[in-house]
Image 1: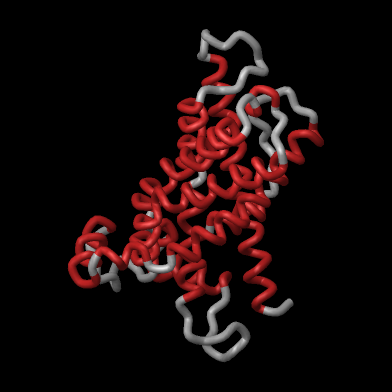
Image 2 (image 1 turned 90 degrees about the vertical axis):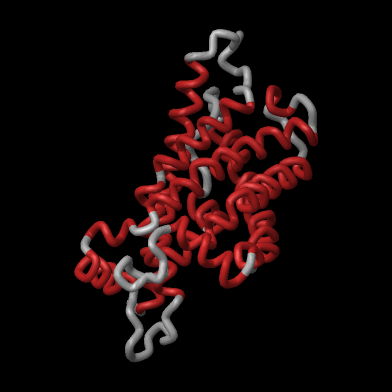
Length: 255
């Protein structure tokens, strides 16, 4: 198997694992909140948006343990000047071993704090915007679970774009922190990184590449939530919400 194939397969496996945790945790959070809500009259009644947001933040917190090392490896692989397959190129497995040997196992979780700060609100925004925009675009759709294709695509796209927009500067900071080891880093921590970056490069540094990211997020998440709703109908579930979506598509949309 070629090195690029190994990298792709490893990334896909980790992304699927991450998103399995995300949607399982989201489902657990929704069911728990629904069970504690005495104002609900039927099991089919949709959750309040603040409950959807809360369940989303829970899922964001739970998946951080997988997201942090996955994104650290991805960032360092992307920073290499050598092309895959050329002399000196370090593949994902070898890079993982190098980080563990040089920085210790905990080195793989460098940037956990800023990842937590980024993910817990963004996943809440992600799910809440999707549910909320359905109701805005087609009133009554959350309760009826019937929504037009155009409204579905728009709600899904906006969910992805707004979730990214809400925390984009934090993602920039996280990437800078994870780009090097603690010993080699010029930053004392993620807050120091934000201060130094602002001082040396101005506030614009926190928004570099954002337009392209938001555009891509809209397109991909429109497709992701189409798959999401298709699977709902396919499984004909009575629970709110389901736990299965296209994990690889979601992974590509958010990272």
